Length: 338
Image (spheres, rainbow, N blue to C red):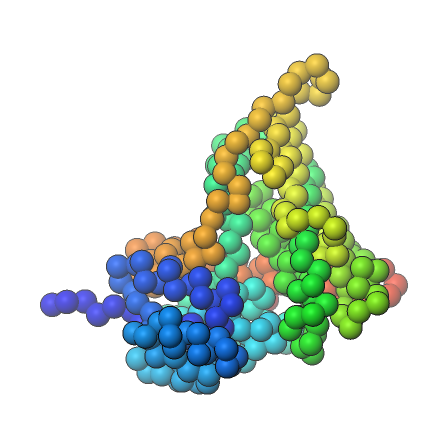
């Protein structure tokens, strides 16, 4: 008997269009439907993908009994209601970050998911697929760096016009923590295997103060780890520099510093000792690269690279950072894991 392929639908044809490759190159899955409410993206998709059903109404995917998996790549404020509706209609969910915008939304998603134990959620925290960071993770796990006591992750966006002119400045609330820093939070926690205890943070609006953008364009957070050690996370959307993931890891045996072309690894405190040059590819990934492992986890071939618990843990930390930014008295905020 021929095994039926899982059917996937994609909502949002910005970054969501890149998801098509991930599903259609998996032997047990295929895309059958696309959705975008933009008239231009809708008409472009009709011409470009004649074999798919194309719609402007997300319910045509979310409520379609023939669809098994939904990719949600709509604007951030639509993620929560679309995730919930997908789960209630018995669909696995692959969602672009963030999964939601508010703590009560994350709690509700957890409740719905608890009532649907056979369903899975993953998120496109794609830096895990960067070859340079994957090889670094392997060496960290092998103990080459000793104990990591301090780490930095700066998300330098370098695309100011996207928040001053695009949808990000027009929705009810936009967070550069959820839209950018979340990648660095996930990367550093994945690399080190650590867990955040509490956070403090500040934000500024200097780069966008003469624009219509109403939210912080720069946020810096300090994260205290349960196991000891500290991390600094920054979301710098106003930087006059190209898009880049600035990562530094300080261990008791080695130090890692990411660069655009190469990374540098120090094994000595002596200025006369040359560092090791790391030429592993960066960034070196396609935005659909996490989808294969997600589908594998659904069909019982293994676990997703970004598991359901990873999605909730990272979002819980980011919610605490955003809360710390909004606290005018500068109090430290404990992470409430949902």
